[in-house]
Length: 401
Image 1: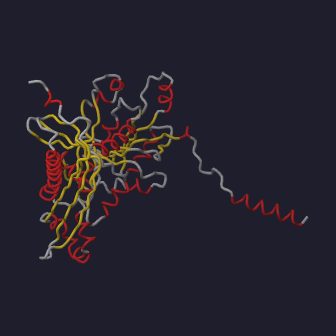
Image 2: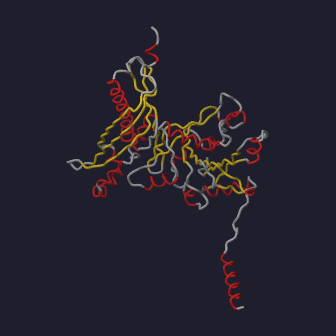
Image 3: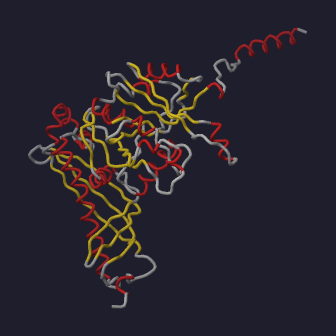
């Protein structure tokens, strides 16, 4: 009898330790946001835009029905991002749920004023994950970008997310950058942040209507274009396509891309299939810092549109040399632009010097941007061609004259 009593007492105590769904929220009580836009308003407040999923339209389109758009966009203003989000509840019958964010778009005007205050809530909110991508709307406001409907994907934010992933893997002039990376670069003493630019092409008014989904010639579309260069937390300029590729070569983020080399009578293209970069800092004999970039790449001959003899073994070596010069030009172009035009270290050379010479860095880190502009940079590129394809001669060389 005594054992039975103790057993039931133990069970009752354990029941008290069990947690329930005290803070549950049903799906029909939430507005699921997949993208957020941050802008500055005319009265210097924040304009926050959210792209919300319309579940009824997504479900109805799967069964062939539905006449509305798959997403809706709402805006609100406030002295802070949090205030604007809470004020948005006056327009919605559900609370905005941010745990499924895929994209955060920052308007160019806000980016030039500074992004530190506006992204604070993104890192502070315990409900938000940090695997979304952050981009800058180039020559546009974020609210305009979020209103564009995309024909290849029902939910525009999903299209932007997957498109950025694919562009980074295949083109090398863009980069997927998460919140953690931005915060690390903002806090780093040897590297400033860089974000991918998002360019709106076409008519914004036509792009936000359902007609943008029905035409084969899309009236408005979104395209990733260049990299935004920041000094501290303020946007100061843009890298063009070649400079953006050079930046990503230095960062070791190029997985695959296409190199276009000029050759007699046309061009010859090499598809890079893998790259590996090492960036080392050192002090010269005079005690001045210098940077050594070593890049090794492997590639395949992708297209030959010139008069060359592919059966000549020495030509493979010529292809490798042409490709090496091409890559090195992109690298040095990125270095020159950041040193002369922007005068800020977004390449991470300060971190390399810090790793190699911590004592020098401790004395020089306060003046690093001025030292960076005169920094000596050496780049060495080695390319190995692995395959030339299933045919030796180019089609052009076999055309009957």
